[in-house]
Image (cartoon, rainbow, N blue to C red; front, side, top):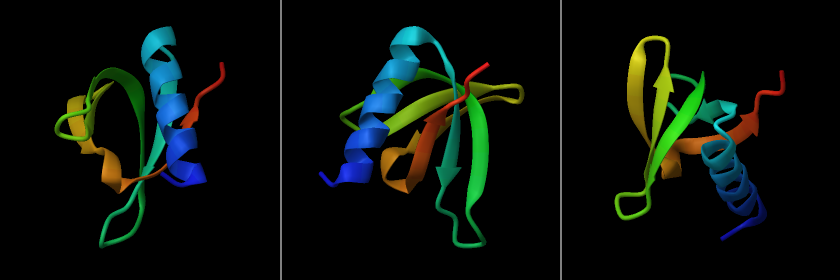
Length: 73
């Protein structure tokens, strides 16, 4: 696990426990995307996170996450 992956894992668990909003930068073939919301579940077996946001929720593959930051209010 490289340094960035460790940082992502740490922030992911902090966000889940503290119910803090996050900004996720995702890899996409058409151009990187950013999405924000609340992490409501981490599925370690399938390596994905459930992100709830204004449009509902998405399951995001952990391997597609380029960066993940807490949104400080």
